[in-house]
Length: 187
Image (cartoon, rainbow, N blue to C red; front, side):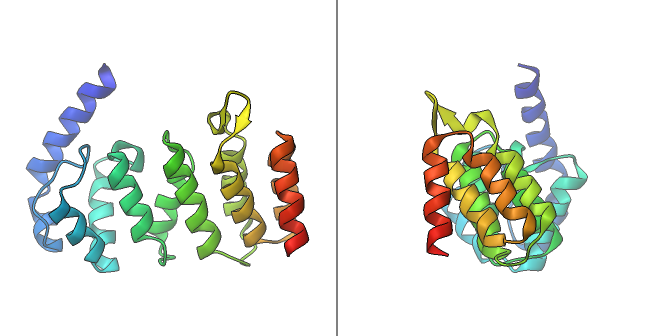
């Protein structure tokens, strides 16, 4: 209940105090805790990198994290960062790996894997591994699609750490172990 009240208060604060930010990026104030309107959605996805970064940073300054946004907005941020290696996008993608929604965790892993393919980034592999071992990625004792996306991303990023991290996740279920073996065979 306290979290719900806090979100309502944050929503009112953001609408009331972000007029300058919205004007700077050309958007009208909106409630980020609710689903985006079609107009807001289209406009947001067409924003230039610098405007998205300015918008993101305005919310960060207020203490608003990716998890505070509605799930559709969270997916929108991931989509907006699919070709962007700027720091703010890396923050968004790493935060997405701990999201409460499996679809957001899965999309975040997919984008990280594509964006940083063959980069051998140990820091990203560690974030992906942590997400891959998250108990929310299981339903009725079976792994969700998220773990396969995470394993794929880790293997794609590559490096010495990658296979060890992917193997750790794969050990949690035979299906994942078989998936990793098939993936290694294809590469």
